[in-house]
Amino acid sequence: MSKLSTHQIRDQARKIVASSKGGIRYGDLIEQILSSDPETPKNTIHGSIWDLHIRFPQEISKPSRGLFVPMSSTPGGSIAPAEPEEEPAAFKESDFYESFADWLKNDLDEVTDAASLGGAAMGKKWGTPDVVGVYKPLASNLIRFPIEIVSAEIKTDQGQPVVAFGQAIAYRLFSTKTYIVMPVSMTVADLSRLEALCMLFGVGLVLFVLDIKNPAFQIRVRAQKFTPDMFYVNEFAERLKEFDVDKFEHLFR
Image (cartoon, rainbow, N blue to C red; front, side):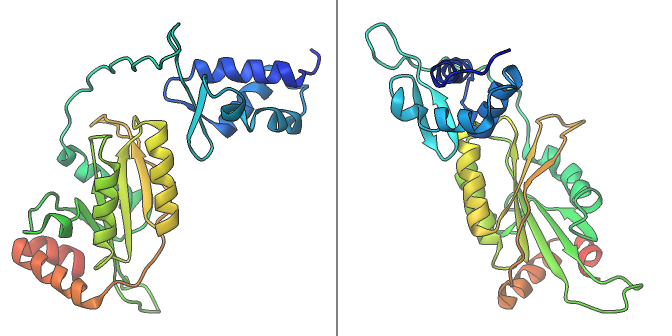
């Protein structure tokens, strides 16, 4: 198989983008071209496709960094409305609280204990994480260290990334680390923006499948550690103790 020319690379890239519902990441586009034409130098592919949205503005847009999205045009040149997506099965956020708490403790190994709270159960919606975990010293630890609180906000509605991000940021008042947990089915453009925000502000990002039996949680961005405000740490602990003394004892004793 011979090497592709620049013109051939662009033609192939345009076809791939056009067939990618929701768009395709730049790196994935490179890999698809390489897999079909391995003799073509990778640098040549890079040099040929980086500006597809500039060369073919009627066909391809670049709504966020590293993402190419197809623009389907009607014969008249106007943008055709997107086909309505199939309505997903209804899930409650609470369906995934326990499974994520277990995953946070046993798979991600970020906490020593975790519990589900959710909603506005403790009186403050933006002060009540769906799942809260603590990383605390064990009896076997020779060096003691302060307890760390890890909070998570879970959304089953893929259209709420901004709300989830705002809540996760609010939890930083009393949390050492915070996570956003979103459906893997969210649009590529929303995921790209949310991932960039999480990396910029140190918020963790986890994706999951809307399947109660097998949510298949996967880490996308690791949460960074921050020092919370101890006033709000104690305020959160007091609210939790009033709401559910057993969960308080489980987490903090």
